[in-house]
Image (cartoon, rainbow, N blue to C red; front, side, top):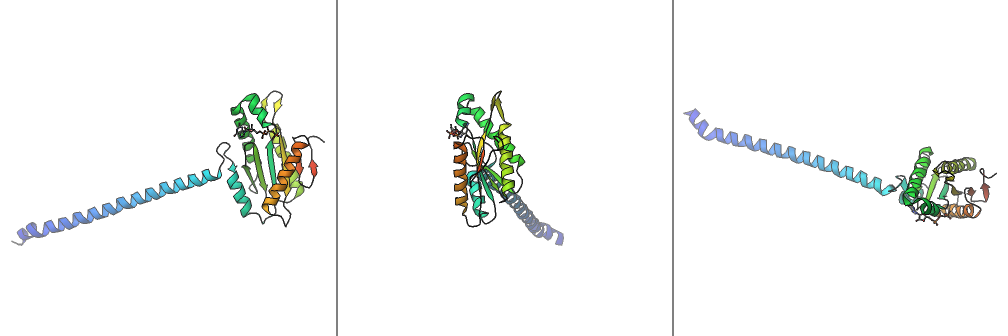
Length: 214
Ligand SMILES: Nc1nc2c(ncn2[C@@H]2O[C@H](COP(=O)(O)OP(=O)(O)OP(=O)(O)O)[C@@H](O)[C@H]2O)c(=O)[nH]1
């Protein structure tokens, strides 16, 4: 008699409770896994987006936005700025085509980036313009790096008899200068390097480093 009552009334209730428990636990598990996967995807998208925000599309080095943000947040340190502009780049495009121009930009950026240490940031800040934040105010070191980058450009051969040259303007931060002043002085030095014949480095206090032309 007791078995019959158990089978008719209690067992369906237990089975019901058991099935409900399993369903609830499974549901929670599925929701948990879904949430975990969604968070992981969101994280990946976020990482990808923040990488894209600081990377130049063509050359894959840091972009202008990242460079200026970095400069702003490190402007209290001693540092130097190098602004590098490829000489007569328009002629390279005109003579060899835009694709070859692009390749020159990519190769120059890659070669420069490879030889800079963690104490520097290398970025493409304009069409054929690059910049280096170099965490030193040591004039000799800055001149050496500039010379090294001049040589780097000359190693890129577009065709027989046609290599690449760059002009570099440099400013070394003094204690009282704002980041914008340092950039301005580096720009003026670059302008001077262009005017004095290109393929050279000018340091903003007018000391001209012309190792290639000495
Ligand atoms: N291939 C290519 N060309 C670009 C890119 N961005 C800018 N340029 C070209 O770079 C050239 C820059 O020319 P200019 O500003 O006259 O400078 P330049 O010919 O290098 O002359 P100087 O700077 O005076 O030595 C322009 O013709 C632009 O079209 C790019 O992403 N790819």
